[in-house]
Image (cartoon, rainbow, N blue to C red; front, side):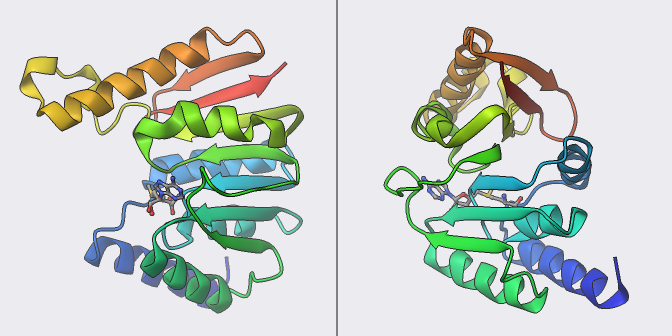
Length: 197
Ligand code: SAM
């Protein structure tokens, strides 16, 4: 990574921290960028852009990878546009401003990366699997939901309990899905990798 890009990435991470924007933790971004290189991923559909950090990191990991990414929060989307421009990746990162559940995407992708509303993962999976190429992957971040997945339910607020149940339901949904081989990886906040058989 050259000096200029390195300082842009540092700035993006600083902005995320200062503005409480949840971006991937270092361990998970390292996993994801290594994964796209190792599996020769050329096209990614990301659900949940935030300010563009993970999309930019994937694009930087390989010169011939293209990413389409969807964000529903306008302020974050505008910030992502700025960041993609600053890192000169406009030709490889397409930003869509919409609720992913309302967005129409026609292309197919080697990898679909789910990193948006954690309670909606089954809906995202079911909506976008038509956009997955044969032998493609669906990766999901925050399967441990900041460790709360292992917490006693009584310790959680009603809202959190509902979310945790949805994440557990998504885990079961993946385990019982015969079309995919699924691995759960205990790094960062927990990552699942579903490989389309
Ligand atoms: N992938 C980003 C990164 O690591 O740089 C972080 C994404 S952040 C964890 C989740 C983002 O998903 C938030 O910015 C949120 O506004 C967005 N989001 C949540 N639900 C969404 C939906 N239904 N459609 C589009 N974006 C959504």
